[in-house]
Amino acid sequence: MNIFSGLLSSPTQQPQVKKQRRGIEIKSEREIEIMRQAAKIVATVLKEISQMVQPGMTTADLDAYAEKRIRSMGATPSFKGYHGFTGSICSSINNEVVHGIPSKKKVIRAGDVLKVDTGAYYQGFHGDSCITIPVVEVTPESAKLIRVAEEALYKGIEQVRAGAYLLDLAGAIEDHVKSNGFSIVEEFTGHGVGRNLHEEPSVFNFRTREMPNVKLRSGMTLAIEPILNAGSKYTRTLADKWTAVTVDNAMSAQFEHTVLVTETGYEILTDRSKV
Image (cartoon, rainbow, N blue to C red; front, side, top):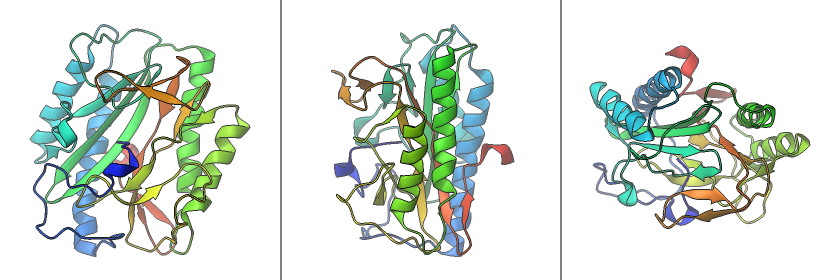
């Protein structure tokens, strides 16, 4: 789940430790194992949703399914109630960039570019991931946008290891996106994830000097999530105060994984191929 940087490190409405920790958390082996379970729940739900989506369903249908499945696996939805958000998933279609609110009125149609983002809170820790689903057959341009968005995520993840820097992965993402003719949304970023849904550091998808170029350490857990637009990089927020859309109505795509930094590289905790 993306969020404005001002919400980073804000406590969720799930149970939290009483003492708010500051800075970037390094997870212990015990905490990492719990996060593996939280992330596995998220990966399972997203994989199942990707297999069940059909034209004629509503985003409320997907939301109800996600909440039921998350709870059936002993977790609670990370997003529901978060700063007043009403859904267990963010469901954003076509020109909707992020934070789309599930609705019975929002019908999924063939050709849609559907982003589904969800999180699970399990034994004190969160997992967070997003996929973009081409509904039946999309246009060639939309198919390319989806493909490049997923490739960009993995280009960034491939840079992750202890001793690397955040701008190493940001640069890899930016270079791949721009070389394919798409723009990167800069208003929303990735983030640390763990006891809180959004923690430090901010994980940028483009080169910037506005934030510290953090050196990665083993035990950090990051939500890496590039968002690509087919047109302008700029967005605007609708009257519901959540849904962000492209300013030019161009298509948008996003992928996200929760990733553990290790001494030699990384572990993708929300890997859907393992569930």
